[in-house]
Amino acid sequence: MDEVDGRPITDVVGFFRRLEVPEGCRKELLWGEILISPGPDRVHDDIVASVADQLPHERRHRPRTSGVPSPREGSEPQPPVPQPLVAFFKGLEVPEGYKAELLRGEIVLSAGPGVVPHRGVRRGEDRTPEGCWEHLRFEDAGTPEEASEPQPDLVVLERGAGPASGRLVPSEAVMMLVEVVSRTSVDRDHRVKRNIYAAGRVPAYLIIDPAMARCVLLTEPTGTGDNADYAVQRTARFGAPMPLGLLGVQLDTTAFQTLSDVRPHSRP
Image (cartoon, rainbow, N blue to C red; front, side):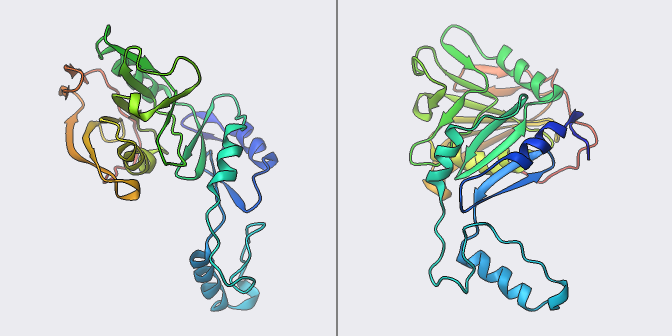
């Protein structure tokens, strides 16, 4: 495969091959995106070993992550290593046209939005009221007690509520976060970021999904950590208005474009 979403991935392949990750971590190149995650824990490694042991010896190949002992080399589970990843993330320089996000102790490098998602963000921004709200595009949103620094497509906050400097906007200053789903971000936008934003007590999370031609508005965050979620979910098809009660507007979705040749999904 030479491109994703109409964009060449040659440069990111070279970047991936040269990328050195922290000891004990592993890197994967998946459909033009780079995932950097902690090495497997004892349970994961034990299951892989069990399966491998049941296969013909001459046919099995079990790649190991550097610096992570196998079950036979250590008796204790291997702990996750988010802190080295946090430091690595903060100093990471990504290829032009890509963005890096820290999501629950994993780093995801993905291509910037394509034409359809970009237009969705632009129109969503144009339809939120000016004066008492600020729009920040592609700013990192930090959540308390989380090894996460996602990069939403659009951040909406009360004017003057954000930090005076720096790229990180604390979640307590945010009124609404907006993500526009791309071909490769369905699970992250609908599941991972939903959980992270709810844990950060972000009042409203709007998912604009060109793959399914609908908007999903999530409000009233509840729970903590992995159990966090939004108690209220409202859906509107493209072409119908999406009420944004916290902002006092009806989002006009009539001009939102859809992604063609994308397999339908069951999220949210």
